[in-house]
Amino acid sequence: MIKKTAAELGALIASREVSSEEVTRAHLDRIAEVDGKVRAFLHVDEAGALAAARAVDERIKNGENLGPLAGVPIAVKDVLATEGVPTTAGSKILEGWKPPYDATLVQRLRAAGTVMLGKTNMDEFAMGSSTEYSAYGPTYNPWDLSRIPGGSGGGSAAALAAYEAPLSIGTDTGGSIRQPGAVTGTVGAKPTYGGTSRYGLIAFSSSLDTPGPCARTVEDTALLHAVIAGHDPRDSTSIDAPVPDVVAAARLGATGDLTGVKVGLVREFSGEGAEPGVMASFRETVDALAKLGAEVVEVSCPHFLYALPAYYLIAPSECSSNLARFDGVRFGLRAGDDGNHSLEEVMSLTREQGFGPEVKRRIIIGTYALSSGYYDAYYGQAQKVRTLITRDFTAAFEQVDVLVSPTTPFVAFELGSRTSDPYQMYLADLFTIPTNLYGGPAISVPSGLSEGLPVGFQIMAGTLRDDKMYRVAAAVESVVGTLTPPAL
Amino acid sequence: MTAISREEVAHLARLSRLAVTEQELDMFAGQLDVILQSIARIGEVAAADIPPTSHSVPLVNVLREDVPAPCLPREKALAGAPDVAEERFRVPRILDEE
Image 1 (cartoon, helix red, strand yellow):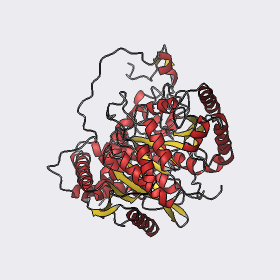
Image 2 (cartoon, chains in turn brown, orange):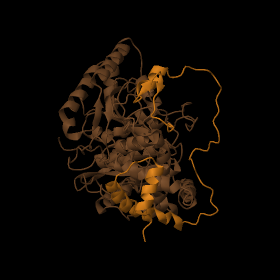
Image 3 (cartoon, rainbow over the protein chains, first blue to last red):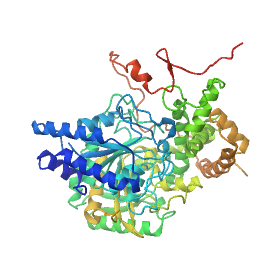
C-alpha cells in the first residue's frame, strides 16, 4: 500500500476499495517503523490525521466527489502555518508555537480532502542545502543514512523516498524543493513565483519564496500542483491568472512524444562545477529527449554565472528584514527577561539563543549588504544583475520551450562534510538559483544513479508556463522510470 | 585583503540585535570574509544603466475593496506570546526609571 502513487491511492479511496483511514494508518505505521532512522518528521499528528481520514471516508460514503487526492496522506514542511499544530520552521525560536490560523496552502490541502500526517524537518527558516541546519537535528537520506537528504526541505523529500508519505509540500527560495528531490530520487516542482500563495508561509526571502508540490511521480506532483496553485487575495504578490493545466501536460509527456518541443542547454552550465557522474547522467537524459523527438539546441545565458552572488546578497538582505519580527514579544521564545535587562537586551538575548549559526550569518550578511555605503555596491548591484538574469531567460524562451540542466552539481554528500565551510554548501544551489531570481517555474525529476545515488534533472520554463516543464519531466520519467531506494 | 573585520561583524551583530559570543565572532569573521569575497564578484558585471528588479511579478499596486471582516480574536492573537498581562503583550521596561 505505501508504495502506491497518490493517484492510485486516490482512485482506490474514491471507489471505496480501501478507506482513507486504512491508507493513513499504513503510513503512520511506516513512520513509526522507519522515522527513528530517517527523522523526516518534526511532528506527527496521528490523532488529527486519523480524524481527517475518517471525515473524508464519511463524505465519500455520502457520495461527495472531493477530487483525485481526497483521502491521500501528505506531509507538510514545517514552515507553513497549521492551526493548532506545532510549527517551528526548524528553529528553537519557535519551539512549541502553535499558529492561530492555517496557511492558504494548508486550507487548500484540507479542502481537497488530503490528510496531513505531520510537519517535516528543514534547515532553520529554510536556509541551507542539507537539513543539517535544523535546530532539531538532521534528516537522513533514505538512500544512505550517512548522507544528507538535501535542503532546506530535506524532511519533505526524505518522507517520500522512505515511503512515509506519497505526497509532500516544500518551499523553494533558491532550490529547497528541487535539490532535496534530486538527491533523494524524488520529484519536486517550484511553481511560477506568485503561482502559489505565501499567506501563512513563514517568510525567508519574500521576493523569492515559492511553495510547491513534491511526490515520487510527475503525475502525482502535477495533481498536487493543481490543488495548491491559483490566485489568493491574501497574498498581494499572488498572480491573478488561470493556472496552466499541469496535469494534462504531465499525461501528454508520459506518452513519450516530444515532437515539436525545443529544449535548450545552457552553455554557461556546461559542466563546470558538476561531478562527472552527474554530467554523464545529464547528457544521457538529453540524448533520450532527442530520441523522443525533442529538438535540442544550445543557448547562452551569460549572467547565470552571477546568479549565485546575486542570490546571496538578495536573499540574506530580505531575510535580515523579515526575521526582525522574531523579537520575543508576540510569539516564540523570550530570553533574559529577569527584570535586569532592557527590552533591547532581551531582544538580543532572545535572538542569540533562538537562532542557529546559519541564520545569524545570513542576518549579518543582509545587514551588511543593506547598510549605507555598501547598499549600491551590493544589494543595488544584485538587483540590477537580477534584471540581466531575467533578460537572459526571456531571450532564451524566445528560442526554446524549456531549459535543462542538472538540478544540483553533486549527489548527496556525507553529513558534516560541508557545514564548516558555508560557501561550499551554497554551491549546491548553483543550477537552481537563476530560476528563483527570474521567477519562472522549474522541476527536478530523477535521471538515474551515479555511484549508487540519485541524480536530478532540472527543467526550467517561462513564467506561467509550468505546463511545459511538466510535459518534459513526464517524458524523462517515461524513459528513466521511478527510482527505488534500498530497503531501510 | 579581508573583506570584513571582526570589529565590523561585532558592529553588524549589534545592529541586528544579536548578542553573539566571542567564540561566534571568531568563527563568523572568517566565514563571512570567505562568503563576502566570493560574492563581491557581482561588481564585475557592467550594470550601471540597468534598472533594478525587486520582484518578478510585474505588479505596481494591489488594491481591494475595503470590506469589514472578522479578524483574529484577542485570545488567539495572544495565545502564542511569551508573556501576557491585562490582555496585552507584556514587554520589559523600555525607558529608564529616574
